[in-house]
Length: 595
Ligand code: NOJ
Image (cartoon, rainbow, N blue to C red; front, side, top):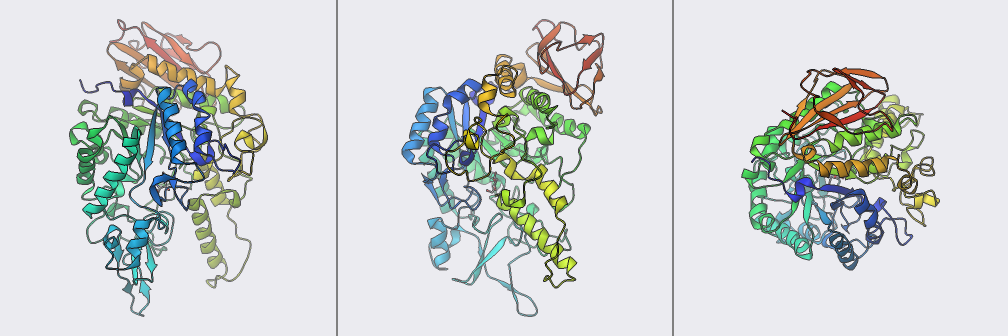
C-alpha cells in the first residue's frame, strides 16, 4: 500500500513561537513555563505534537534562528529543567515535542565561530566558509562574490582579524556552517542525539536544503541590474551534496529513533526537486515545508520581493494545491499541510477576508481547507483563533523583525538618494506608503505578535512590558478566553474540525481530485479512500454562488458532515450546490456508496 498509516501522518502539529506564546515571569518574553501552563488548552484543541521554534541560547539577532549554544536553553525562555518539565507534561498527555534544528548556520556568538574567526590555523577555521577579499581596479576591497543575503546587502562579512570574509546567507550574525567538513556533520549528529536522547520526538529542520553550496561559489548572474548584490539561490538551494548529507544524517541518527522530521525547503517550487527529500526509498526526511502556495501572492520576478503583495486568483491557488496533493502518491510522497507560520502574514488576512463581517466565516472556511487536505496537519499559534494581521496604522517601529527593518531601510535609502539627485543628503519626506502596504499584508511580524489569551492587560500574554506590541484594538474582543466559552467561535470550529479529521481517515489519506479547476469562486474537490468519499466545496468569495457539480455521480449516497454556517449546511438540489459568502461544506459517503 502506498501510504501506510503512521502516527506522524495522522498527527496535528501545533507550532509555538515561544517568545510570543505566554510569559510566566513578567519579563515580557514568552517562556517554557508559560507553554507548560497551556498544555491542557492544546490537548483540548486536539494537538498531538508541539513544534517549538528555537529556544536555545541566542543573541536573538534573528529571534533565535541564530544559536550560540545548541545544548542549552536561552535564559529568557527558562532552563533545561523547565524543558524537561514541559516534555514530561506533553508525554503525560500523550503528546510529543518537535524541536527546531537550525544547522545551516550558527550565531556568530557560538564558540565554534569564535574559534573559527580567531586565526586561519585554528582547528575550527574550516567549520565555516571563509574566503579572501577581491579587489577592484581601483584597489577597493570587495566581497568574494556578488551573492545577496536574504536580509539584504552582501552575503559576505569582512573580518579584519584574519583579513577574510565569511559567508552568511541570512544575517551577518548568522555565519553558514561548512557542511563539506565531516567534523561539522559529526557535531550536528551529536547535538541531534543530545536532544533525542533527552526525549524529544523529532525535528523541524531550518532551511535544510541550503546546506550544500555549489563548488567554487561563482558569481550569480545579474538579474537585478540596479543592485550591487544578486539573487544566488540557484547556487545554494538543493546543492550538489545535500542529499548525500541528509542520507548520512538518516543513517547515523534519524533511522535509530521513531521520530517526526520535516525539512524547511525555501526557494524551490519544483515538486520533483523536493521529492528526493521525501520519497521513502531515498531515506531522508518524512516531509518538507514547500512554499509554493504561500509564495503565490508575491511578485514572480527574479528578484525576490516577498513583502510586495500580488493579487492572486483561485485558479492559481487550486492548481498549486492540486498538484502537490496528487504528486507521486504511489511512491509515498507525503505533504506537510500548512498555511501559516512565524514567517507569514495571517491566513485570514491574506487568503480569506479579515473585515469584521467576514472574519469568522472566512477563517472557518480556511480551517476547512486545511483539515480536508492530505498530509500532516500544521496549525500555527493563534491561527485557531482567526488572528488577523495588525493594523495598517502601525508605524515601522512596531515591526521588530530584522527582515522588515532591513528591507524598509534599504528602500528608504534608495529613494532618499534618488530624490536628492544622488547626494543622499537631502532629508525630504519620502513616500514609503507602498512599502508599508506590503508589510501590512506580508511581514513576518504578523505571525510573531503576542498571543491573545484574554481581555486583561497585554492580552493576558504578560504582566510586564511585552517585547512586541500586542494587537490592542483587537484582543479585548478577540481572544482565547472568549472563544473557549463560545460554541460558534473560530476556535470551537477548529477543535471540531480536527476531531472530524481524525475520525475520518479519508481526509488524511484520501486521493484528491479537483472538481472544477478553472472556477475562480468555489474550490471544490473530492477525497477518496477505502470506499469512502468526501466532497468539499469552499466559497472563496463574499457573494452567494450556485456551484454546479460536474457530474451526477458525485453526490449519491452522500450527506453533510460539517460546515461553517450555523444552519442549513449542504443545500444541494440536483446538481446545484448553493453556497453563501465564504461558505464551506463537507459531505461524506458511507463506505458502500463511493465509487
Ligand atoms: C527560516 C526561519 O523560519 C526564519 O524565521 C529564519 O529567519 C531563517 N530560516 C533563517 O534561519
